[in-house]
Amino acid sequence: MKTISGKLEQDIAELKKMLPAEDILTFSFVSGEKLPFTVIFADPVTDKELLGEQVIRPLLHYAGKPSAKEVGKHITAPELRNEKTFDKLSAEILAGNPVLLWEGADEGLIVGTKKVFVRAIAEPPTDVTIKGPREGFIEDIKINSSLVRRRLKNPNLRIEMMQVGKQSETYVAVCFLEGITPQETVDAVKEKLQAIQIDVVADSSYLVHFLKDRKYSLMKQVGSTEKPDIFCAKIAEGRVGILVDGSPIALTVPYLLVEDFQACEDYYVPAARATFTRLLRIFALLVAIYLPAFYIAAQLFKLQLFPIKLLQTISGSIREIPLSPSLEMLLVLLVLEVLNEASIRMPKYVGMALSVVGALVLGETAVSAGFVSTPAIIIIAFSGIGLYAVPNLIEQTSVVRLAMLLAAGSVGTYGILLLTAFLLFKLVTAESFGAPLLSPFSPVIPHDMRDSLVKYNMGSLKTRPKTLKSKNKRRMKDA
Image 1: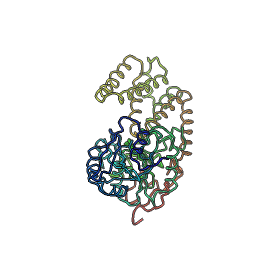
Image 2: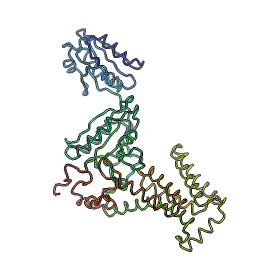
Image 3: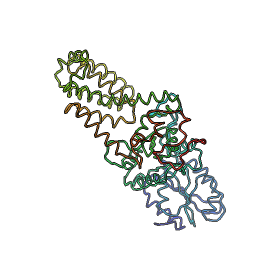
Image 4: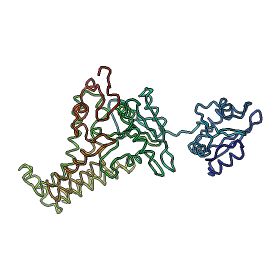
């Protein structure tokens, strides 16, 4: 690697050779003792006002030795680093941090005057709560790190920066509590991040594939959240958190399936209410997945599953329907998915109108025309609502629901049972960084069940989850 030579013109030429873009600018000036200085910076991402106030103005009257140590004493910028190699200096310029060079320099000075474009901290759209904090992560990694540091005022909190992406060189922060998080988990996360060979990391979702143990599995293996309070609570239990510059979504590992049936609000309401809502979520999800499939299986293979009065009602509704039960249900499900996708992608107000058109006009017209039956519309609508009771699992459960429909239409209830057994096998054998995905139910860990589908009061949660193998088991002083 080439390093600073101390000859100003030669060093500038080397940096301009590495950074030939037109928006890489230089500004030269001379101190009171006629010592020539040059600042090299990326115009769009550098705060030029700060650069002038904290670097250029103080050095106009500089009269000391041409060493990095002496020059640095006169610069008022709080973030200042020394570097000799041109590769690292050019990387810092592209990141928005200007580089100061001068005649006779032994090192270049990197000044932290990057211009930051950020939106205001607000409640995240994916984690809306009635009670509890309403702050959400944004797209700046430094602000996100400060939100974490503000909640975990602990000297053992480690936020270790890495760069991932061959072209983007995106900053990634690995967050954990030393003395609580198992070191082998931290090392495994770092190893996987360092092994990533990808051009651009535009969002934290890009890293999920590389953090998974089973690369092509449908099962979710990495947790995610937009709320700092949830993120910090998971770190305090012994997990590793990952923040990505440019993404408001933070990742956590190890991941347990039961996490997605828990909500941050569960910890701000009475334990009985939290337990009820958790059980309600899993009931809604099971109904959403299995109700359309069992309806099809009963129609095609087991009519006796319907009560006689309900059977009479259904028979009257489907008598004139030209489609088979399986094709009818698939058609309604496909229309629901198309409407859902279109309403998300369309502008906000057009999306609302589209939802009304889809729900009222298309649904009512299709039933009146005899293309689909009323029970099919009701079942798919109820199934769609049930999926959103657990929003973090929508991508996986929508695919499972479709697979259940196909199995029910092909083999009936036997197909549903076989597919359920296959999914359970996959879930039981899946792990996330050494933690079983179905813990604390498989394997059975009675201690961890106090905060699973059933929520005990805070006084009962005196120790950390055994599944996570935390170094420090005690969570409360009297534990």
